[in-house]
Amino acid sequence: MVVVGLGPGGRSAAGDLAKAGLEVVGVDEHLVGGECSFYGCTPTKMMTRAAELLGETRRVAGMAGASTVVPEWADVAERIANEATHGWHDDAEVDQLTASGVTFVRGHGRLAGSRSVTVDGQTFVARRGVVLGTGTRPAVPPIEGLAGTPYWTNRDAVKVSRLPESMIVIGGSAIAVELCQVFARFGVTVCLVEVAGRILAQSEPEASALITEAFAAEGIDVHTGADIVGVTHAEGRFHVELGEQTLEAEKLLVVAGRANNLSDIGLETVGLDPEAAALDTDDRMRVRDGLWAIGDITGEGGYTHVAHYQAGIVTAAILRGDNGPRADYRAVPDVTFTDPEIGSVGVTEAQARDEGRRVLTGFADLAASPRGWTHKRGNSGFVKVVEDADEQVLVGATVAGPRAGELLAHLTLAIHARVPTGSLSTMMYPFPTFTETIEAALSDLREAS
Image 1 (tube, helix red, strand yellow):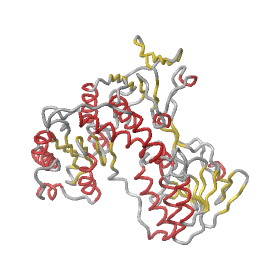
Image 2: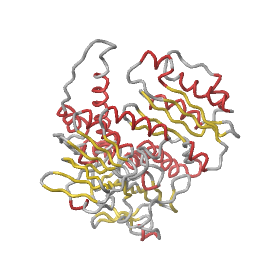
Image 3: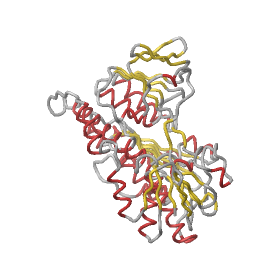
Image 4: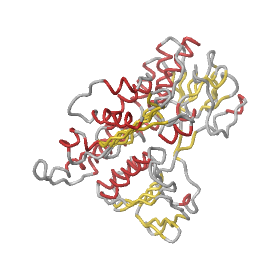
């Protein structure tokens, strides 16, 4: 096998196939481990954990005494550079990969016909086939004047050792809102600009409203439905023109989506469109005979856990053929690590209705639960469940609040296993926990029916 792209999914597939006895060549031109290990999941969650600690410390007054906290970004920067990324070197990841039996080749891999890959003049021909996991890069929106300025992307943001005094963030996705709150809690004056009508536009409207309210309380200025006319940079200052209003800040962070790395990997040599937005696969991640794809380039969401999941599907398909598992995306979970956290799984209410389902929803306020009352400050949140009323199973859920991602596991299992909502409603929930709010949301669902 040849595996091109060694992010979370590609690295996992290459290692598992090699351990199973196949001869595997793994190819990557950048860092083994990919965006998640060096610029995404791991470093940003170190950042959000630090910001969470600051937020909790500021809630001590009136509950546990008094507190004073002095933010120090150097501690965060040191952890990211030394503990998480090792100075953005992947020696440890490469050693782990080769120890599993993979032959690693550093360079730009391109398809050169069926089961053939070239890497900077070398050609590798695979007897079984090729797995593509070439991932994404930060997208650059077509804003007048932006391309000529020293703006940041998420890759720059996780490397910063000195924070600016002010920052404009373009984008309202999960990574955008996470970074907004992190920098604001460390003393940066932050302004978020989103062209959509609300931040976290792919989430339930209740989640967008909750985070917008939280941001207002923390002094983060949010502009939604914005018309970004242009960007200029002069004398160390950015200016973002929004119609009649112009925003100014020391730094500009652009986190407005991702672009798939498909245009220069030789897709045309196997009869595929190099300008495609994503690769179509079957339920065993096969693009065509001898070619599989995993991760962001499949269009199934840019989540590390999805890439790992797909890697398992690919490995089984290569080793066991049609006896392996099929990909199932009914219960894909996702967590936005703001404070409060936003966790979601399955489809939103709007998406379920767009699918033509007869929908019922249940809603419960996290703060109204016994655990919410005892938790008090920092207890904002909710549980929303979406039921297919005909099948009487959950097809979607959103949890917002402290440790929302941990509560999500219960609902993910329910959707994945198609547990009847009646069974979920009659089981015991531990007291006093935030989990009880799920029971309250199911109770609201029953009343709606």
